Each structure stands twice: as C-alpha cells, then as structure tokens.
Image: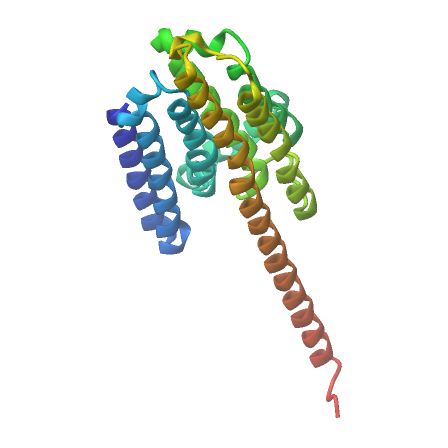
Length: 267
C-alpha cells in the first residue's frame, strides 16, 4: 500500500510539474499539490499505519479507518481536481476523447448527483449491515474492495459537492447545500442504529461488555462525524456561493461602466 501511495504522489508531482512548465505556474497551484498529497497522507494513516492493525480487533478503530477514507481523504483528493490535471496534461485529441467519455451515458449516470449520493449511503449502510463486514475482516481481498468502495463512492459524492472538476451534471450552489445536508441523516441514523444495538453486531470482536462498549463508541463516531464534517462543508459551499455572486456582480458593474463610457461625456 505504501509503495502505491508513493507512486501516486510522484506521478501527480511529475505531471503537475510538466503542466506548470507548459501552461505556466498558475495552471497547477501549490495548494492543489498540497491537497492531493494530504489526501494520500490520510489514506496512508488509514491503511498503512498501526490503525490498520487495530481495525482487526476494535470496531471503533475500524470505524475511524472508514471515516478517514470517506470524510477526509476523499474530499481532499477531489479538491485537488485530479480530472482537471489529467485534461491539462493530455494532448488536444486525447482531451476531446476524455471529455466525450465523461458525457457518455454510463459515466454520466455514475457521476450524477442522485446516483453518487445513493451510492455513498448504500456503501455506508451495506457494509455495516450485511455479511460483507465480517467477510472483510477475514478476507484481505474483500477488505481491500471494501476500502475501495468507501473511497470511490465518497469521491463521487464529494465531486458533486465541490463542483471543481468538469462534470456533465453540475448542481447550483443552493442545490449543493441541500445535497450536503441530506447526506447527514443516513450517517446519523446509521450511527444511532449501531450505538443503540443491545447486542454485539459483529462477534468477531468478542461478545463481552468491552466489545459492546467499543461498538457504542463506533456508533457515536459515525453519528457525530456527520455533524462535524457536513456542517463545515455546507458553510464552505455557502462561502463559495457568496464569492461567485460577488464576482458576477463585479463583472456586471464593469460591463455597465463600459457601456456608460461608450455613451459619450457623462457631464
């Protein structure tokens, strides 16, 4: 895992350097580089640190692992605008093919806000209330697929929220705020369902009071993460909306000033 993350980081930096050399320093800001590397760092903490070993014996640690992938790594990677970098680094012919591919029905459907939101909620609930959870703890291949599902579904979800990469379906700022807020109930209710369970849901962690207490901690982490992440995300969308409105107003004022200037001497 560590070697894959290092390779991904090096690939990003080399590609970004080439784009900056060809298009100028503003083409790929250092902030985007930092966001991508921070996203890889969050994945490393989740999957290539002692946290991964603890996930096999403690439900709460496993929950932290999933939340790091879905609520930290995924939005950081999305905000780095990886699709934009791929388009910037492509030749004109390849760029046209990529844009056409994005608008083909399968990919357009997969990245649509409704499907992305549904997939995110389905992964959250399905992995916790199905045989998949315990299978992931005993089968490394299933565990890897589970992590991929968390990261992939979360990136699709956050792509609709951030709206920074090209997409065939883009939400308006008010719709983006609503989209973020309606993601909170599934996470909150999932956390509540786990927390309020009166029996151990996953016997692989044990059957005593300690296992039940650890399970309740995991439920509290899931339920609380919805508020801790969703509210700041909605605030960021609101600030972005405000900034866009101010820029639009400034452009409108500039056009009006030019028209008045063309009308002759205002005195």
